[in-house]
Image 1: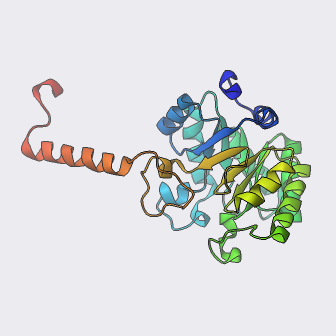
Image 2 (image 1 turned 90 degrees about the vertical axis):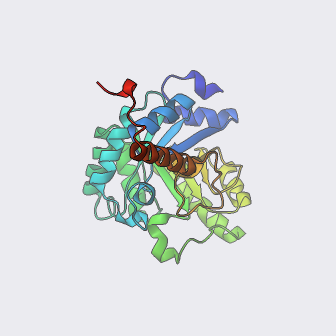
Image 3 (image 1 turned 45 degrees about the vertical axis):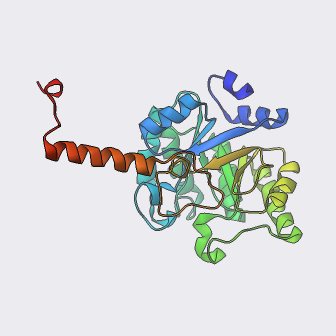
Length: 270
């Protein structure tokens, strides 16, 4: 659609898409080749999600990944992208201690090739960090609803915004994020009626992560979409492929050919 006609997607592009009534797409990527393919496919925003802690590094939660790891993955992804907007998730405790270190850590992601960063939450401190980042020239994406970095204080993987009162509170937070200068807000794990209500009362785009169809965009973890990560699949993740079976099949055939002497053939040697 209209986004496809724009050579490089930026924060203004997403606002134009929302205002036009269209939608944009967001997928995660953690390496050069995947990012390159997502970009070629027309994905509008590529997120180096801290979900890589589980799907790429094998950690149990997102809490375990650090700034240096996110910086390395950001560099790899950015090298594969020409058109999409590249956003890096700021990991746990990378922006929580003081504003100066938050700006420094976020700045490292921009230096590594990201076009923007994503930050969870809406405390007075977080709002100040967001405002200062935007003033510094670092675009910020917000994240409300279920916020994985607050997993322990939320008491587990619980749906947020289930009542009108709860939805009103998230909308209040979203408006605070909007006032701080964020260019978009992820809404995670909430009833789609709540997400619709919030989306209709904001000027910045909303991105659904298990928040229904009424947001301005949808985001999923690419390993879920491709059917590569099988340890756990969220209810809201749609599987478009079966890379697990494909990889197993290819690896087994290679193993068999090596052990039977079929690989390499005369055409595959010097």
